[in-house]
Image (tube, rainbow, N blue to C red; front, side, top):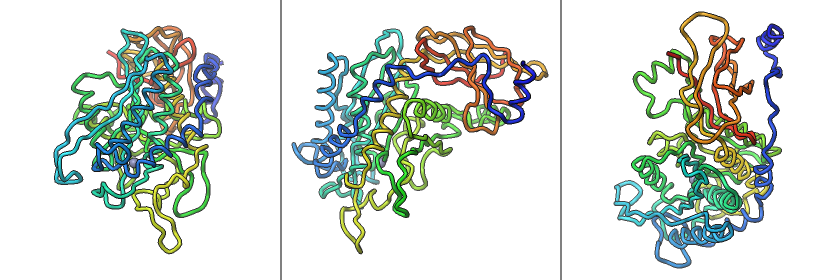
Length: 449
Ligand SMILES: [Zn+2]
């Protein structure tokens, strides 16, 4: 049997391993995914657009117009959800004075992120999972804080996804903590996420994953009229900012260019997103962001955290960073009428499935090792139980070195695996799994003692 299995895999055929357990949807997550509602998302975006502008340099004191009114409205929504969830969700506007920087901030501003925290139910579990969108919008002139900047899709869509996940998830219990945040200052230079990531690092927050959602609700490009509402992109960094010196040497010698933490998170997002959301393909893009653009995932990455960016498949640049106007028959501007709320529903549900699966999972296995002392045509892996949670067991993940995604997932109840697959020919990782089938992020083994 072993011989047949190995031969089939070498021939490039994906086969079912006898040790593989059946992957099923966790009914609790499936029920939450069903609750994500296109009309809710649309109503949030309508409310956000109604503030006229949400420019970071607009008024913070005007009750009806500008970023101050908008962030207070997000706070009011979080507080509504908190009341419906028995008060377990807590929210506040985290403000700071940001000084003039000679770039996109000319005079000191009151910068504010609206943050809601759903505290984990396990007091000894300090893991945090974050979903982020940016509340601020912009005009063609990024310094214009006065005139209309609707920002329906950029990034009303990401902010709406954050709100909808908070609404649905705050009624449920998770051992780990989930933070829902809409930041400001993205268009001014990633200011709000920079403030939050630095603060998190200084306070020692154990953030295991950040899902940054920016522009996730429109289904066509400005070049063609083809509607594509079945694919969404996840951008991940290859080399981490901390990968220097000896880390780079190890990556080079083991061929781990595509196995950094951000890339593992991207694979995870794809697997779990596609498990729970029908008619949606998650397309991994192996770069930190698009050309000429950046996003709120970057400050987290710079501070050593694992983060990815989620963005629609095809962008329509007539509706981003553009003043609302009609020019030669073309309508420009970021208006809700150009959005697809069913597509936004799927992308939001994809986020929710991932946050739910992560926050319900046991912690990652510790001290994951691959035995490399001798030559041989097998692989020996060992690991230790996670600090947080009680796993039912572990999945060993295997893929060919040229494969973008994990090809085999083998269940082990114990903390070691001896596999008839050559360590020279495959990549491996280990993840913990709960009784309900919620997997931790995978851990790539380091060479054993
Ligand atoms: Zn944006």
